[in-house]
Image 1 (cartoon, helix red, strand yellow):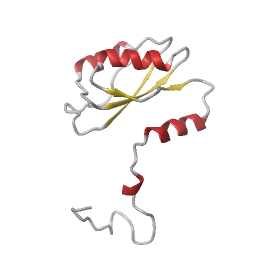
Image 2 (image 1 turned 60 degrees about the vertical axis):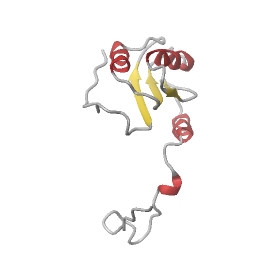
Image 3 (image 1 turned 90 degrees about the vertical axis):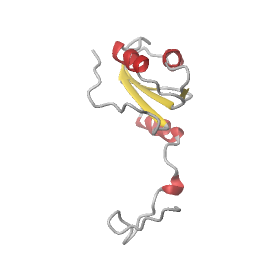
Length: 123
């Protein structure tokens, strides 16, 4: 049985992407995930599902989520974590999500740390 084991934010408006991970078998959304999606209005957020289990279909998972969150955007495919998944497939899915704006990631180097960084409001 699936249980959400952490505090959920009440307001999802500050998030652009929702990474939704859960375990299921044979394309049936777990009751806990159904309840979560029914009780929380995620608005026009992009939901990126990743699912552990066997016998699942990405299109069916996306359709089920879409029915419970009709205003949400969905990634092109859910990541299906099966016993024979290749780590390169996981890396590829993460890259396709485009969650990180590379231009905003600081360059590494001497003196370029959180402790010594200068924060400029216009940047």
